[in-house]
Image (cartoon, rainbow, N blue to C red):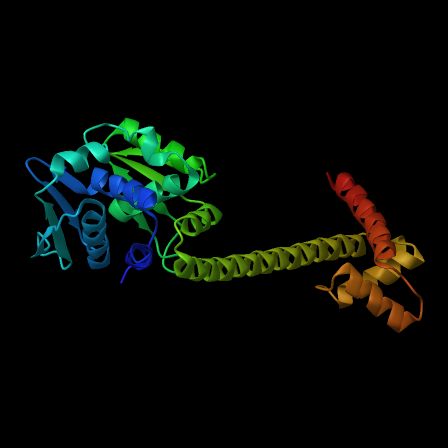
Length: 304
């Protein structure tokens, strides 16, 4: 079962007051029904089909005719078709199905706005499993004005949704993990939210560990590169007169660098301090290597 189906199964089992049910049903029928002499509702989710059947029955005392079909083109999922043959005009008028946008009375407070978004998700929404792919929440709608309306409604909750044209439809999408978590919380998909947040925390921790490992490796590479350059400087000085060209302190550091070619400055300072009984800091090592580098650069300039 996909993560989308899991979320829809959870949300479709929730119960709410009548105004919220009306708002939710309005959004669902707007995006998952066709209207002629009857209202035909199509969904691939059995739990959602039962939920819509219940809402129509409770709100309008109408028993939907239910048909189950195999999906087209060898599609494995079953398709559930609910047909409303009575009170169609009243349902169409109440739920604003004959209008491009719903009337304000359907979404006049916070609870009904959330319910409308919940119905939108049940009808045309999908969400990627965070364990298998990138974070992505999307909705497909037919009309640009309606897409702008839905995006504006969602962005009242700081979901940062955006619109993209896809063939003859419009896609509303959210890509930020935190915003998708907020969306699941908003539609009361609590179990799905726990799963989503567990995966998100794990992935964030894994990414942080990888970044730290990369930084550590970069630091190691930098230390080795610097050490190799210091070795080259010392070997150049040896070719042009030996280490006697250096002062006594710089000569000591040079000898130990040739002996411990891949040691960091801190490690080198500790080794020298232990073996010579002369305390020297990382900063002291750095200044001595700077003098060695200056001498090596002067030799290179004379070579040119």
